[in-house]
View 1: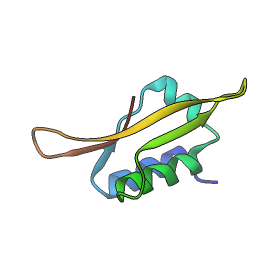
View 2: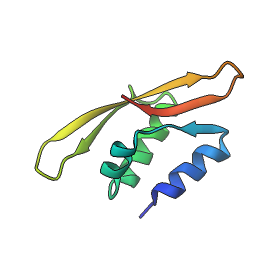
View 3: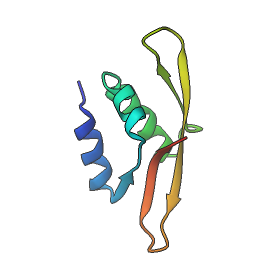
Length: 81
């Protein structure tokens, strides 16, 4: 299983910062692999950026990946809203 640290390392190796709210980060625990696949597809332009995070009580919450670039040209991806 892919860890969240591994997901962040992949982003860093691509000179991309992954920005995620702490509550979302905790909720993703256990779903890192599917999160990574969704993020990778989004960054490659192969998806619309939607990620459906399963909830423990049933159902899901819809998260949206977005890309942003800082004034210094640094890419921020995986920003979730």
